[in-house]
Length: 278
Length: 297
Image 1 (tube, helix red, strand yellow):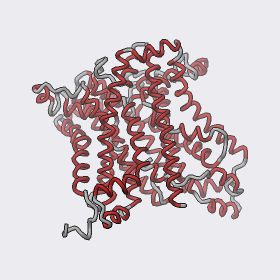
Image 2: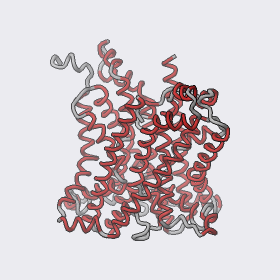
Image 3: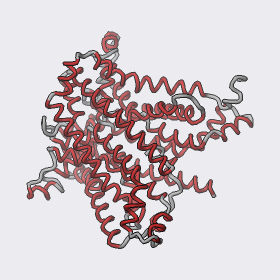
């Protein structure tokens, strides 16, 4: 006690940190390290064959392309929704605000079959698009729809608090200097929102890259066409190709670590710019 | 998203403030277009799927609906889902509190790295989350042969499902508590200790009341994810009907067997869970705001 009496008045440091580290290691770090140990046991040729075969490369293109596009769509409409929810009063606003988080709360398998039901040929939206020869379900557009759904809350929820906190003075100053509303938005409001918008975009993208449950029902899962990378891992596992599955998983893990670092950097940037965390 | 309760300041109705001020008021047609586009997007991407779940569930009548729910395989799926949540939520709760206590109340090197590592499961694909437990406990994995010799089943059995669920819900409670407890500091606890309270008394009477809404918020989100997890659980489950099927996996099996009404009936329970989750979440946010503004006043 005498040793720490001035520094640590509160008890429980050793116990809480010890438990945290043990639990973190057992549940997360040690199992995750298994991916890299397993990958290290492969020869470079084996690894390359597993992660760079044409079918796997096609899945990367689809997964990253669709995730990027879905995150971009959500950046535009998420900003629009966040703006509408903070700046305007309209009937039903509270309900819209409360339901924005639905993709976080709704199990992905439920989202998957519901979206498939809507966008299939005989579905509510699918049947409207059918006469125009547009097919959403059971192809790459279905993947995009599912990834857009699950990424929807991120941009809204990162931009909304910044918009709420934004002092009116800046726009008042802009107006008094003769700026119209569009100029004030473009030069004053948007730069303040930009770090949060980018953070939301990165979060939505990172979530979409790993998504599985909502996509597999609506994608049709045609090899080379509408097969996402997480499904490749599942397929390899079902064929007992543990090494191949692990190799592809290691590629995905490296990309997720990289995205996590980017998101952390963006969050730090947002905090510096606006003085709050998102 | 981190620490939604922590960062939720008294969110007064800011919209009317912006609309009353000529410098921040948009022209009516801009308002009309923004709300029109935003709400259309909301309806197409969020509301329709939600409505579709219930519409499809009741398409063949109410009897088919309830038959799908009381069928033995469905009941066993519901039981397993409840079990997985009942084990993973308390474990992650204890972890979350311990991690937040260590991180918020003490200084030590590597703290930021630890916070990043706690968030790690969020950025790992659910499929990879399932795979890593296969690599540790599966037949070809590290402990596979040993487990087989001792007749212990983890993969394709309930323990694997629980482990995968713990992994995907790992950060939920910790990431709500850490930012809040960091912002609260340790003055109140130190005051309690210096007035003669024991460590336990301080924890239960000072710390927990201060963070109860964030704690509840984390538990609600953690529970929703635990009950709804699909990808990670799918990898380690083995899909044995009546034994290792959770509700989301049961939905998948029914759907793939073209029993659409039954699939949507079970899915509607999960959708109800999601709605209850959102309702509770909004209530907790409202209470948290209320408490904050009371304290300020």
